[in-house]
Image (cartoon, rainbow, N blue to C red; front, side, top):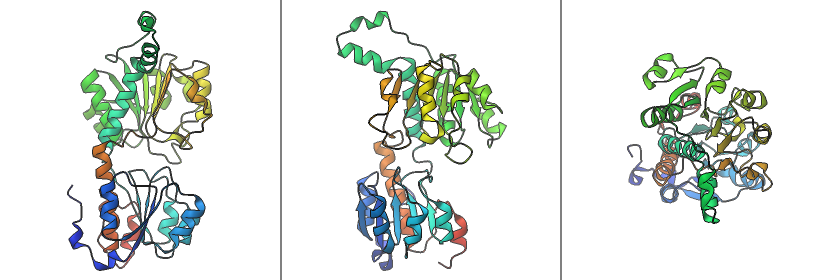
Length: 340
């Protein structure tokens, strides 16, 4: 990886700093790099009280989603210079609060693009081919399920992609190249030229995408515009034969209304890698549906990506502690306003 800092160049000043890990890093090599150069504390299953207690005298924090770092905790930090996410998403960190205190926030984009897009395709295929129920039936001795099972082909079907960023674009490419699917995309911030290059039809109306698609795959960032953007009205626009896939953030969907949609058969099924809260409750009603596939927010956590993410997070944190500018600053105004 090009941006990994060799430990022999790290300053002695950095070695004296304290760093707090709110949750373990994705890979042991990231933790090893930090432990070689700073004083590391790890909160494995942190409570709010523990975070508030430990953050007060640290210079750096690594936050692993779904753990949160809110305004209250950030205000308590006396020496904090840098907060880094474990992956790309920054919705677990109160960025305005960090910015107000002059704390640099960094993330690690593009390192999970391939694994999340692959996981999305795996979920689409599992839904289309009815994999989970077939597996369960065969293992329970019901081999004749083959006479009553319903599978569909992907070729010629329409996939609607909500959010045509790095991951959404990769999903579009794979669906086009591998399965010859018709691809619609809804993303108000993407230029038509990008969509055309990907072989995607960009639509201005989300409802049009929902009503036309056999699969709807969600890839937006979680923000004020996308918070609970898929609810009762949107689900009722979908075909009763269509499937919903979410590998973005749990709160993009109104989960209670998705459960109603599944129960009332407004849609054919769903596959979710993300929830709100995480982990989901042991009484979550999604567990009751055979046409729902669930995975534990693991789409981007392959062996290859985990190592890159952990090293990127550790490296950028150490760069800030050395007074060197990291490559992925979420709030660049903080860096420009400091005399490093």
